[in-house]
Image 1 (cartoon, rainbow over the protein chains, first blue to last red):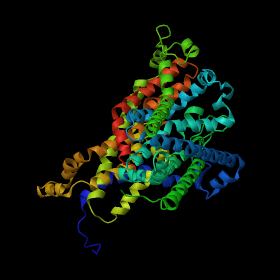
Image 2: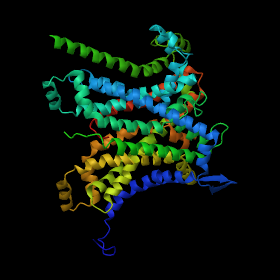
Image 3: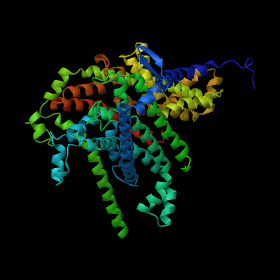
Image 4: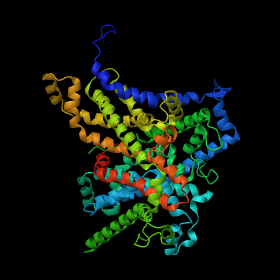
Length: 308
Length: 279
């Protein structure tokens, strides 16, 4: 409506209120994000930064030394995510369903205790489990022995075929509190009348959970899934704390986060390469973006949200 | 009668499952902390026993105090966490107020722009963040971490706080305007005190991830004098792998501050999550 010259004077207080947040956010988050994408098209040749187009990506996907590592990390990452979806979220939902049953005593106490692992740092969690599962200390084998299952014991973190699954389960142990809390909140928000109406029709107990509550909390399960996805695909700390940057044994626990760290920061004899690191970061960004878009446009729209 | 028995057995079943899971959740913490007070022999002979007169020992803690500079690390973590929270809350609330209170061109767009960061992890941009910190000389300073965590926390803070600020009554603000208060005074004197519960929620949500982060301290501030407690204990434990007393004591010392924070803020945290602030 107003012409550019005849615009009412700028309301400076709006600018002042917005500026600090927008500046910090743009300078430290958005700009580096795009700059990282940009760097993935460059490389260092003779001490100078040269534009190389898609060469870094060609190396990443075409050169066997790189592509093997990349696909290994990506595959491991999907396994890591799958275990979270199959173990963490169902356990979280089950715990929440039990916690939300009416007139349950000590509910607050259980809730607080089960959330404790979530607040611990990865360093503590990684080392604590490493010690507990260690064959030297013998807590895990002794406990299995006590229930007559000693033959099941193996040095899980040291075996290529078990290490990743073990670490995924440790991560599940750590984060089960989050789906539990979110689902618990969703279950509490279901109005009493709906459940009572179900009761009148003879739907109680487990049937009430499957037929009434579960459909109503589907949107929350969707949010948890996408949060799990994003968190898993930029995970790093637990693997690093438990297995080091080489994600041993023999890279069997390598995920995208550790792969990117090794590549751009360098480790032991390997020199850091910021450009290849950027290429991996770009690939991670793309994967996360695809996941988020799939969720926003594919899943979230189909989930009905009920307003009570 | 049938129904009553069924509810009783369900109730016992519920408690059984919850007690079992509570034990699973707390067991590792319990093992680490109790063993940190035992002699090396006792740690290996009977790891599940509580320390008694014979097996009690503080040797691990003595090593930790001698070798690691844990007070410095603790202080660094404290400074980083408190300063980041301060900036997240101040800048986040200001931006949220602007978005919630004023109509201006691009309001919705600005809101969407700021919300982008809720889903996209800041770690993706690490390569460029490191280059920026190196070129500005901020690498190995606590400022690098404070800036990164502030940027990381702002999107969710703006999102949650602006929802809350829309609920603040217009009459109150207009009354303030009639009394001649400037927009700044309206924000600081009238609105901020009213959204204090939401600010607490945002603070608690951000506190634990910042305190526990390993990635950015490792990359941006690995120097001895800027190590955070998380990084410091990681490095320390890595060096003392074979000294079990020291490792267990270091782990216990690292657990302690988070547990204290959790005990103080758990009600706020749980209320924040369950009030649907993250939906």
